[in-house]
Each structure stands twice: as C-alpha cells, then as structure tokens.
Image (cartoon, rainbow, N blue to C red; front, side, top):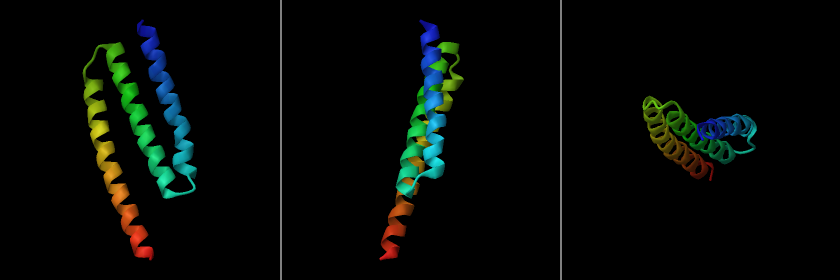
Length: 89
C-alpha cells in the first residue's frame, strides 16, 4: 500500500515539472498564474503523500505553509494583473 503512495507523490512531482514549461512559455500572464497555482497544488499534494509515506509530520507542515503562500501569491498576482489591465485603458 505504501509504495502506491510514493508512486502518486512522484507522479504529482512529475506533473509539476511538466507545468514548468507553461510557467516559462505561457502566452499570457494569466496562463502563467494558472500554471503557478497548479504547481503549488501538485507540490502540496506530493508533500502530503510523502509525509504519509515517511511518517514524519514536518513534510505536512511544509505542505500547509506552501498552500498558504500559494493563496497569498494568487491574490497578489491577481491584484497586480487587475491594476495593470485598468491602467492600460
């Protein structure tokens, strides 16, 4: 059972690496923001699964902090994009 948890954590990490391409090459800033949010969610899920696999709670704490920073990042980037859109008019 525990090897499946490790496989899913590795799959989430692999998908996050694939999303790095969209983060770097996204045609718009909104695409880059969605890719960054997706990477954040995948990394948090991978950390939670790895915490379950290893039995160490420190990885769960890191995942919670990563999720909280992801929410703040989304709000800040969204506010920046909104101000930039209104200043262009």
